Every structure is written in C-alpha cells, then in structure tokens.
Image (tube, rainbow, N blue to C red; front, top):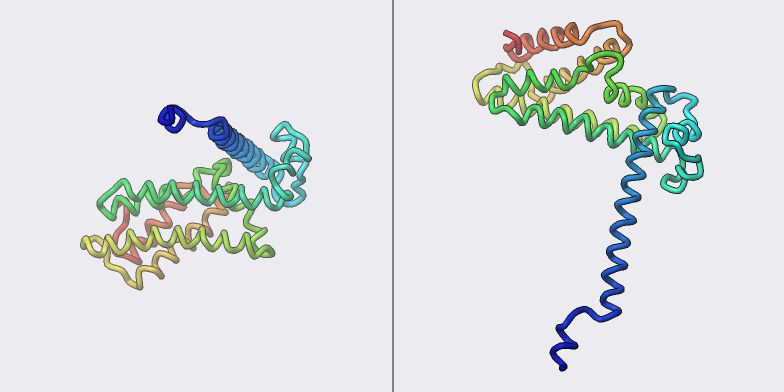
Length: 223
C-alpha cells in the first residue's frame, strides 16, 4: 500500500504543478507568436511609410489590433522597431552565412556571399528594412550597436572566405584579409543604396564587386 502511494502516480499537488508548467509553456508560445506577428506588422508599416513619422497606430493597423494591444507586448514603438531590426539582421546574416557554408571551395563561397549580399531591386524587403531603419543608428546607441554587429558579422564571413581562399591557393591578397573584407562590405553597402533607389541594377553592383575582387585578391568570381 505504501508503494502504491509513493509510486502509483503524481499527487494532486504534483499534478497541479504539471498543469501549471504546461499552461506557462502554452502562454509563452502564444506570446512569442503574437510578438512575431507584431514584428511582421512593424516591418510592413516601416516599408510602407518609412521610419520618419511612423506611429504606433500604423503598426497596430497593420496587425489588426489596437495600439493598447501592441503596448501589452512592447514598452513603446522604439522597443518594437529595435526588435524588428534585430530580427532582420539575424535573417540577413544567417542567409549569407549559410550560403557560404554550402561550399568547400572559397571561390564558390565568395560568389554566393556576394550574391546574397546585394539586393535584387527596390522591392527587396529585407535589405530595405535594414536601410530604412539605419538613420536611427545615428542617434540611438542601442541601434548603433546592432548596426555594428551587422557589419562585424558580414566582415567575418568575407574574412573567413578570403583566408580560406588564400590557403587553397586561389586568392592572392593585396592587403590584410580583414581590411579587404571591410572594403568588400563598404563597396557593397554604398552600392546597395543605389539598387534600393533604382539608380543601379543588381547586375551592375555585382560586376563592380567582381572588379574589386580581381584587383584585391587576384580572382574575379565570374572569370
């Protein structure tokens, strides 16, 4: 009889604990889903209206909720846009990192790294999101720190490819790998604005980056 009470199943209090933990997990998942929906709505509102003049009400309308409902999950609009920018950075960098990781040959890595970094055109949503939010980094230290992290992740991808390519005998670097990597990114970011504004095509920018590659590392990815 003692054995049955000890091992026959959880006590009432134990069952209550299990149910409470289950409810907490369900609430957490629901909150995460709601925050993801609000972040997607914030992204749409930012792309449609721009950062200047963007209001909490704009995001709420995109999400189909009231402004008060948005504030249940975020302290204010700045907090929501910060998280949206952070998530955009992660998506952009992960796509680039994964594209390079698919190849063993540094020449293929470089070609795919460039391809995944240049916007397809003015309507390419993810690069537009990052550039629409960028002005905030001039005045907001937290946003500036995120932008620095974005740059560092991309430089690291380029730098790793350059070091591998040199070790494989494919690249001859004219300068230290980190400097060349930073120059790739600087050129890319400068031209990216032209693509997003419609002043240059994606193919023109990729050609310019290939031209720099020929000078800086002795290899042109389309050669």
